[in-house]
Each structure stands twice: as C-alpha cells, then as structure tokens.
Image (cartoon, rainbow, N blue to C red; front, side, top):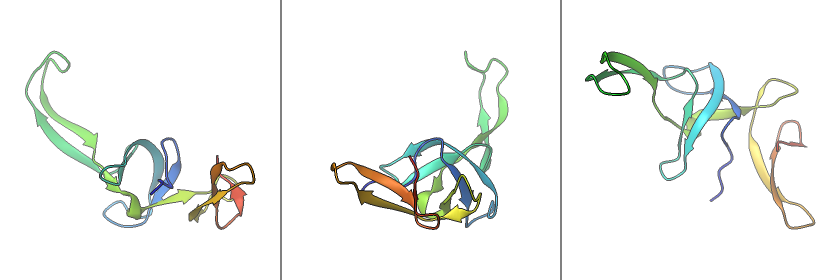
Length: 105
C-alpha cells in the first residue's frame, strides 16, 4: 500500500487532543502508519544528562500521530482534502487532491 501523506505535507489533525490544529509533517514511519507533525502532540520526556544534552531534565518533543487522524491541506484553497492516487498514461503514479482534482506533487 502506498502512503498518501509524505514529509513536508501540510496536514490538519482531525482526531485526538490536537483536533483542528494544522502543521507540517517532519517524519513518516510507514511500518507503523504514523507521522510526526511539527510542534503538535507534544509529550514530556525525562532525560539524564548526556553528551547531547549536558543538563538533562524534562524535554518536550513530538509524539507520532496515526495517519488516519491526519488530513492533507490543499495548497490553494487552504482546506482539508482527501488524497487519491492515479496512474498517468506514462505509467507514473501520482497523488491528487480529491476536492480540487489537481495533482499534489
């Protein structure tokens, strides 16, 4: 199955604590069908001092959100839209916005 959402896509969160908020995907984990959205679904992580973080303490970082809880935001209309996949005449598979009926890539 091909993923309909990719890194750097603008998405809206449609379920969970951050419902209605939008952001940019910074990482997609296809094996688990989750993505991390920049600045959303923050969790606190307690860390010991190490080379990267000399002081340690409580850090806030993004937690993954399931792809079914994310919806692509169309660039022109700035509204959420579903994503479809179609094959062009030359055999290339492309993503398109179902609401605007335009190619996404």
